Amino acid sequence: MTYAAINTAPAHRRGGFISQTVAVAVALALIAGAWRLAGMGDSTLALSLLLGAGFGLCLQRSRFCFFCVTRDFLDHRDARGLLGIVAALAVGTLGYHLVFGLFLPDPGGGRLPPDAHIGPVSWVLAVAALVFGAGMALSGSCISAHLYRLGEGAVASVIALIGVLIGFGLGFLSWNHLYLAGIDQAPVLWLPAHLGYGGSVLVQLSGLGGLAVVLMIGHRRRQPAAPVDESLDNGGVAQKVLAERWPTYVGGLLIGALAVAAYLRVAPLGVTAELGSIARTLGNHAELIPARLQGLDGFSGCATIIKAGLLSTNGAFIVGLVMASLAAALTAGQFGLQPAPFGKSARHLAGGILMGWGAMTALGCTVGTLLSGIMAAALSGWVFAFFCLAGLWATWRVMGFLNRTSTRG
Image 1: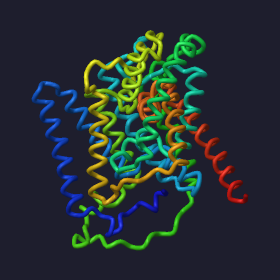
Image 2: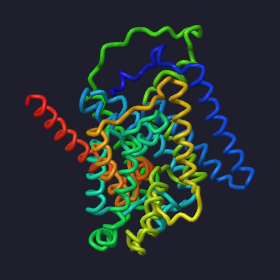
Image 3: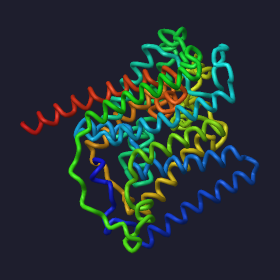
Image 4: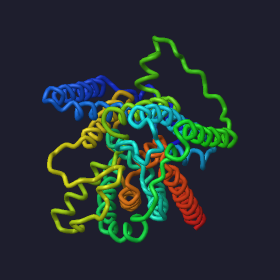
């Protein structure tokens, strides 16, 4: 669905009284859960739950899906969604570098900032990103978008996330071989270590600015939409916030700021650590994956663990994301169980498997490796972005060719 098609919610689709009541109940449950966790002395879990809720709200209201906004540009030359991602990266870059200055005044001292998603750069990362991009094109969304679409009642997203778990398991099976073949000696490159903070910010913002210019040149101006009554009697501000789609640049700016707050207080943004930990725990108990995954636990990124408890920090983040997207979808009248035909289910499962394998071997997805990685000025983030886009574009072209062929037939 394109940007324009879901920019507003028609009156007949806006949430009714029951939906609004359930949305309020979900929001109160989120607040009560955070209050309870804080009262138990686990303020980190409480904050992670609230940050996840903020992230889910931004994703759902601005339709912040890496695949969808890229497809809008490829299909319709609509660059607004991609410019929203650029805005998020620019805000995050500035905020991250300010935080880095507090944590690590001398970036050239041979140390990396704590917990930042700065990964090894190797051919394995490139292949993983290509595979992840292909998986996005097949499944129709990135992993974070599938999570917020759970809150909208998308059955196909459940199937895609099951595929992600399977893909993580396959990634664990192949990890040791890939680690020895290409990751073990791969460099971990952090721009401030070579350019200083000022040089790193200059290079990053120049690159993002150049990308923004290219996107604006490639953007095809659309006909202006019919004027909308913005009076308070017709919903006004409340309608714009709760029912209409937010411009993606608004979501991008908010996500960039949220990413900085998350890194400062909890951990960098990421949505695959909990999914990977579930897959690793199940695989370990069933003795289906190697007991030792060489070097894996020494890397930063969306780290996976053998789960000992029910809820982790990233797990709380995911719970908040899904619950907030549910509340937002109910309020906007965008919730409804969406059945998944066999063909669509098969594509979503296959795409999920590819995304799971790619996210495991790349130590994160479009949020953990691309978004948080580029904000942290990690070369791995830029490499992932380039090859992920290449995999998405190639798969999009192949799928378009197959669709045209089948139509002619």
